[in-house]
Amino acid sequence: MSSETKEAVGAQFSMTAMEHARVKTWEAVERIAAAMQPGMRESEANARGKAILAEMGMDRIWHPVLIRFGENTLRIFKERSVGDPVLGADDIFFVDIGVVWDQHEGDSGATFVTGNDPEMQACAQAAKTIYDEVAAHWRTTGCSGIALYDYAAERAKAHGWRLNLDIKGHRVSDFPHAIYKAGDLGEFAHEPAPGLWILEIQIAHPTRSFGAFYEDLLA
Image (tube, rainbow, N blue to C red; front, side, top):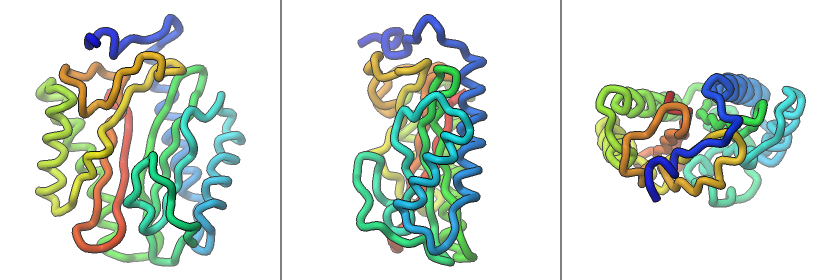
């Protein structure tokens, strides 16, 4: 499939609307994260996340709300959580939401910490730092999606973390992007166009049972 086909968009597509969806999705991530409290079960967190999105007036959810606590932060999107853990007073969690606003897809995710565990705090920050480094590499080099994830693995290792290469980013667009069958960003052999691809970074602590996640639109 050609790069043009993999980066196709619908007749209603608007870059302005994509940026609006991005802003609204980040607002939702922050609101959901602020609602997470120690003692809450993961299932309760996901239900609260859906309620917040409904309160914000979303068009619809295009991928399930995914909030992971503790060891479940190591699990990738398509894996089920183990059990229904309770968020601890010194714990780590991430929020991953895919939401349609004004018929355009937002997809954002970030990791947060309760308490003061320094390694959890460092892990949460590292996921964003690595994202920022990889996004800057894309802006300055114009490299392929494949090369971007090679670089991401290098940067994760340099920072002392393990990059989960089962997570390699994906398309977004005017809803639904799935009709374009574009595959993963990390398999894309061309320079990714701005406003069409989500860069995902998921890392694991080298010895402890937790990780961190960060994703945003390459724009």
